[in-house]
Length: 456
Image (cartoon, rainbow, N blue to C red; front, side, top):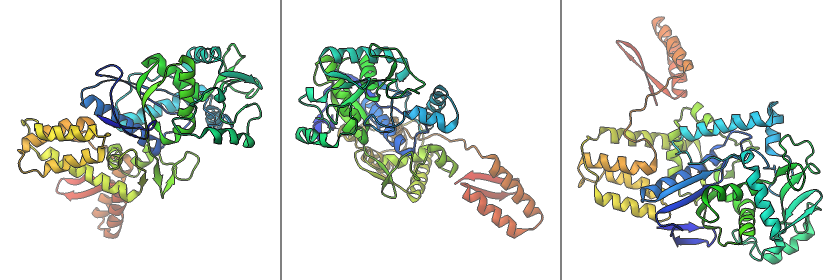
C-alpha cells in the first residue's frame, strides 16, 4: 500500500510499526460551535481511510480527541479561548458549551455514517498527562518561563518545522516581527498558560508552574501517546494544521521522548471551498450538516459529494453539485436494490477495488468502479449486488437499503392544504402548494386513495 506522506511530500510504501496493526490519530473538533461541512469533509476522509485500511486487512485502533480547553482564536497563542468565546456567545458555562457541541458533533458523525473512533479522549480529562509531558520536555532543556507562561524553545530543535518544511533562516529572520514579547523566538509556543495571561479563564488547574491551563498543541501529543504509544503509524487532520499545530505536536512529542520519528505517516485533507473561498466559522459561508438537511438533502448525499474528489484536492461546494450528488446516490441505490440476492462476490472486481484503495486511497476511482461494475455484462446481476455491497463497506453509502423517509410536519400541512384546495377546485392555489412542497424536497401524487408523498 502507498500513502501520500506530508512529511516526505510523496507517496511512500506504507509499512506499519507492528505487522498487521495500525495506530491512527485524528485531530478532532474544538467543541465551541457546530462543525461546518468543511470540517466534516476532513472527518469523512479519515473515515474512508480507516474503512479502507480495515478492508485491506489491517487491525486499526483510531483515536480522535475532543478539544474542550486551550484552543485560542489564533494558533500563535493570541486571542480568546474558543470555549470562553462560545460561552459568552450563548450565555452558558464553558462546560455546558463543551457538552452541547460534543453531542452535536457525535450526531453529525452518526448521520454521515462515520465509524466512531475507538477512543474519544477529552482534553479536560487528560490534564495530568499533559503536565507530565511538559515536565519531560522541561527536563530535556527545551522550555523556558516568561511572563508567567511555559514556552517551548524551538531554537533548541535543529529539525523544528520539518513537517511544514519551514526554512530555519526564515524563522530567525522572523524575529523582527515578534508579536508576543515574552517569546525568545517568533515560532516558540506556549505549553502552559498561567493566570498572568488569562486571569478570567473558567477552566484552570494547579500545576508545577502555577494555576492555569494547557496550550492547545500539548493535548494531542499527550493523549495520542497515552492511547497509541510513544510511536505510532498515521496522524491525520486538515491541511491548515500543518504549519503550526502539527508542527508543534512533533516538537513536543519528540522533545519529550527523544524518539524520531514520532509518527511515520502524516495525512492531510484539503479545504472545502464555497465560491472558491475557504469556509470558516466566522464567515458568511458557514454551512452545517443540519442546513443541508433543511434544504432537502440526506446526510449521505454529502458523503457521496465528498467521494467525488480525492482528499488531497480542493473541493468546491455548490448547490448544483449537491443536487447532482443527491440524484446520483439515489439512482445508484435504486440500481443496487433492483439487483437480485444470492450472488457471490466477483473476485476480479474486488481485487481491482483493493488496488485502487492501496494507491493512496483513491476514493473517486473506487466510486467509479461501482458504476462500472453495474454496467459490466460479464458479471451476473446477483454477483454484482454481492460485490457492490462488499465495496460499500468502504464507501459507507448504505447501498441496497430501503431508506424510510421522514416527512416533516410542515410538508404534511402543505399537502393537507393542497387537498382542501383541490376539494374547493382552487387549482391556482393547488398548483402553488405543489410548488411549495417540491421546494421542500418532496413530490405529491394524487391517487384514488389520496395524496402520496415521496422525497425528491
